[in-house]
Image (cartoon, rainbow, N blue to C red):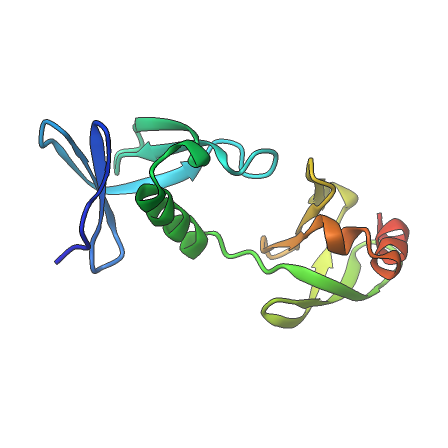
Length: 160
């Protein structure tokens, strides 16, 4: 059983009950277990999104999520949100000096402690926010509003 298909002009997406996604052309050609990938996940997350076959071949390139029908955009955003686990940091409690740096933060998923090995593990975003990648490969987002908070800014300046 699948949810009703989301149609976009010449193709549709079907989200199955098992959470997998199928792509169907208007000719009825079905591509099962497709994946959604962002072309520019940090610099332009809403631009350049690809629907990729299970074999890794691009089926459709979407220039902007804002340009697709709301039903398709909702499915794509849901799939991406489920796959892209990224806690959002609202407050930095402490950052140790030296390398590697121990971070203590409050996120939208609770308090966390993690280690950042090198300043290169911090990516600045165009909107003024940041993405941190800890030594376990988990990414944390600091939105621009939190990055510019005076207390957080002092700790960030000291850590970077």
